[in-house]
Length: 162
Image (cartoon, rainbow, N blue to C red; front, side):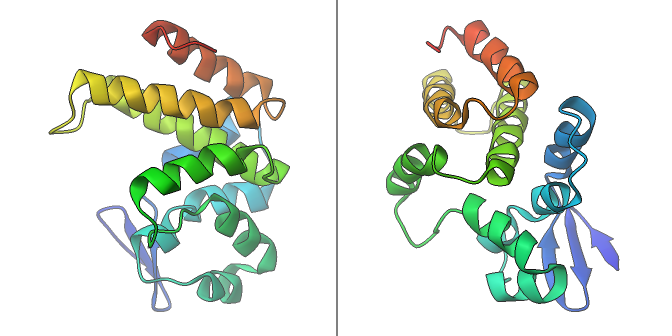
């Protein structure tokens, strides 16, 4: 296995491991011990960010992992506004495992935005992202009180309605 700048290649399958922080949040902050959830957290951006397919995920990690990854993966063929709308719409219908990955991913992303605003992002765009993220999180409520409280704290700090 070769690791290079947030990428890992295992027997020809490129994986994006840049957000290992999502798995860390789940294990260290939320106390998640479900290996399938933690594996899916490591793999959750792989299909979106590489040419890896869901079938390849299933072949190497099993159907269970594929299902979770598939639930949390956006369809990049759709316009960004549609993908964001669908995240809000589908959040409440996700499996418990997918909800955990989504909550940790939102927490990771929001902390990252607070730490360092991406080049080209205005304060208004950051605030709009927080508002959108709160809508997604509202559909995930009842999944992990620990993660939800950490997210709520970030929303309160930004003045985003809960």
